[in-house]
Image (cartoon, rainbow, N blue to C red; front, side, top):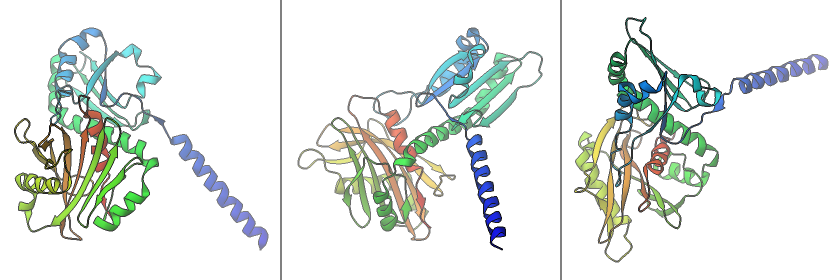
Length: 332
């Protein structure tokens, strides 16, 4: 009887080891590439310098809304097909273009994690540059959403091993949410319905604000109401550097904009982007926030990230904040 049990145990262990080896073998290399970078692969330089390349650059290199200095949504880099070696195949965001005059209609193919993780690849084959540009225009908004998601996934994968479990536990206890806040942050203010989570360096400040209010009806998610509530919250809790100064939302230099996100991970959300500034001082910077109804508590939870980094580029730092905010979930 004992020998049969031992044999069974050995078989189980062997199966587990084999499974682990299969998982290890299936794991792909980490993707490469700069933050917010897209690699466009063309067949020749004429395509890159012509209509095809210009169409991609005109869309992805538009200025990102909500930043105090001009910064592109993405930077588009370029190689030709013959240079697409094993290293470049690992690029996180790939657009592979091909003009094939033997086909009658364009072909669009998308693929996640082709040779690396996280990775998103789109291949567009068309009979002419004009038809290539036309099909790209029909798909570009969806493609941007996929590349944005890929950037967030990369940041969250990077931050996941360094999560601050004390802050995460406090968020869960206080607001009934979890969010993968990495190490390096500390809680600056902790009230019953408000938390200011800060990261401070000599020349930079990054922060998350989490606050909740009772939910009455859908008017509470109106963009004007979200800004009104935000202004009242930050005026109360976020002081400026001199007496009487306080944070508010800029409404003159760059008006805040909002959009609904039905597929936000925690549920239907309203995203708000804009600039904050300080009344009575010259401090300012970008913010992004997500307002979501928590049906279990019948409250609206707003989670916001903002950056202060004077005279420096802020796009990538705000992308970090956005990625962490996308990890927000209501605790079970």
